[in-house]
Length: 314
Image 1 (cartoon, rainbow, N blue to C red):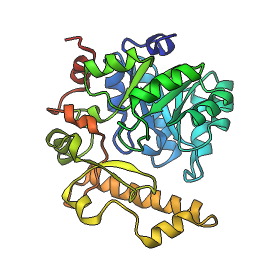
Image 2 (cartoon, one colour):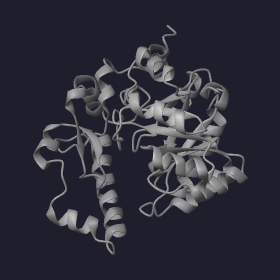
Image 3 (cartoon, one colour):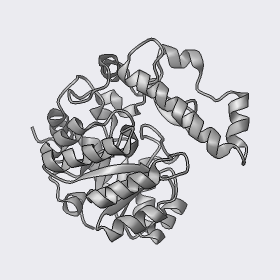
């Protein structure tokens, strides 16, 4: 099966994963210069004009392909405008999350743009394959952010056996040995996020970066406080104080059919503000998103150095 290096014309089979309120254009350019590709969430830009400017900048400065991550469910009120910008400016690929990718695939393919879809199980993987997805992003339970429920050791072989499109593994890769293990299971590449939070090109707070160095896999917990869906965060004193489960009222609203859409949007917006404060304004009240692979983050380093370690190309 075609490697991710061939599919996207990159040196190493690695996607720097889209990280909400973390990934920026500097990181994306640095990733391209290091021989990998980066994907950035469209929601990292508050306006459509900012998204247009970022894509234009990336086209001018990147030394390889780049992608945009779209939240395609109803909680993203900017989705249709974001999709139009991606199509009009012809980004190289789109990664879809949290919703049906049908419309995205149709519009992207008309513009010659590849679409990779986040999946956590075989049933959804078969659905997006039938819709025409170009590859699967197999989000396993070792991933950061909105993780899956199945280990990569089970999920990758399952998807490669039952599906006829390429599988890119997301989660559980913190070093070169783990990347080789994932590729040996049948994945054509890996999506890696948490290793890059503490990069010198990242604009998150120094405290956030140092937390990625100081904390480890045992300090990662799931919370539903941010978006309503389970999300991995570093178990800081503030997270311990507020707890990780929605309260009684939040659960009722989140499960009410009439109010669910609006409550999820509100929860996402409220969580976004908390994450923004955590990422850029370090205080005691912090919610820092990360995955268990911060276990392998030992220093704040340039993206080029992180890639060299990951690919064993020193």
